[in-house]
Image (cartoon, rainbow, N blue to C red; front, side):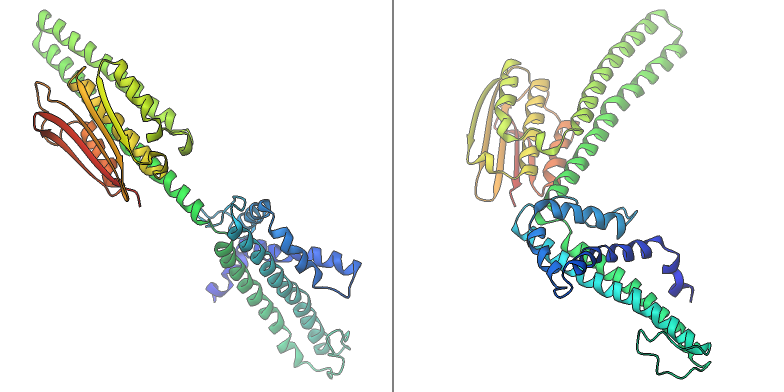
Length: 384
């Protein structure tokens, strides 16, 4: 019983009923103008629903009145971007008016029916609004009087659930909006992973080293050793500050919208920056880079950036060969440079690990390591 009566205690039940009543205001006004054509407001909704901003207005209303407080209501607040969205908005408006008419009918006539049954039970003559004036007065009608109210309760709750499900279906995000939301979510996950990795590898390592050096200097009691330890702590702290500033730069960049972040179309600027640092870049780009999907293009840019940064950090100003190729269903990116004196071991370094993680999140592959006297980074990312 408590489960059946629970909707009575929820504010959503009443806001949904109010949402159903709202379209009937236009119908009520029209009936004053021309009561012989009550269907005319439904005809007016067709051109109204084709206005792109109407979908946004209906989405905001649905969010506030049908799904208040829900974290993921599944209702869009964006204007119609194409004809499919506009037709869905027209269908939504017509359905909302239809269900609103049913809600108003139940809200008016069912309580009146209860009132007239109660009048008959009390021995009085019914008002005759619902043709109950022929019923003989009898106390037995008191048993039937609550039934219309129970029916009204069920109709109100049921129509509320139905209009909410319709809103999620007809006002839900379009395919383009879902893709944009997926891109945003993917970008956030990638940046969070990168920031966590940077903080753990750089700042955590620096702080651990400083603590160990300070503890060893205090235990040794040797002024010369203490000077060396302080120098090491100073150098480690300075490097940690530089890494922290770099991580904060990533955080500041994360506030920018996804569409404003660099893609492979901006790779020329990245290559020029590497050339300015002394590297001799031999770059070749083949295929329609501008047509690469946004997430793949942005991550391709980041991978290229990380690969060039690793070259400058570990090998210095050396010749670098960069190949970017867009084929039918994949983006292939390769960066080669002469091997430095010390070859990094497999899996070491946050840069190489970051490249593999970025490629893996997009369903691609990344191969890093020595090959024929060069250090090679080769990444393939699917475009689909």
